[in-house]
Image (tube, rainbow, N blue to C red):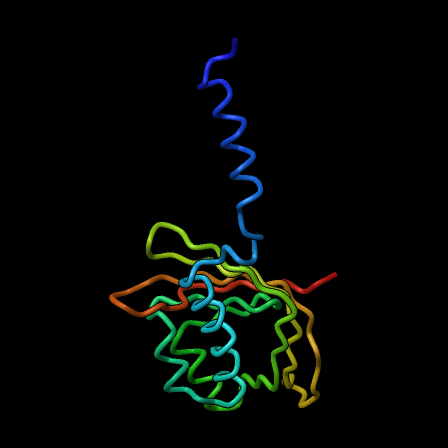
Amino acid sequence: MKSLKAFALPVYLLVLLFSTKPVAAQQSNVEKYVLALHEKKFEWMCHKQLDSLAAVLDDRLVYIHSSGWMETKTDMINDLSSGKLIMNKVTVNEATADYFKDNTVIVHGKGVFTVTGTDGKIVDINLYYTEVYIKKKSNWLLVTRHASKLP
């Protein structure tokens, strides 16, 4: 006769298997918050809401565009203010967030970035991007971002 322990593990695994929520439903409140913040950040960039934007950028920000152009927090704010960087619209097609160690969230996304180039032409750029947010005191701040053009 099998022991009760030998029977309990398979039953426990079956209960666990059929009682778990779908992956999307398991997203933490922190991940949901940072995903919303990451989209709001794009909106602030497009509408030049620089005070709101500056509040979510870490002072050590490294923002790398798909062209290899790298900006600091100061560069980004100045470039948006002066018109050197013009973001017209950002459409996030998909984005996921992973929460690590109480103070780090990594966002992986894919979207269309409508920008005005240095020649004045409006172009759509399809990108993959990764953003890293850290929690400082009670605020989530973007500390780094790197983008690559989709093939």
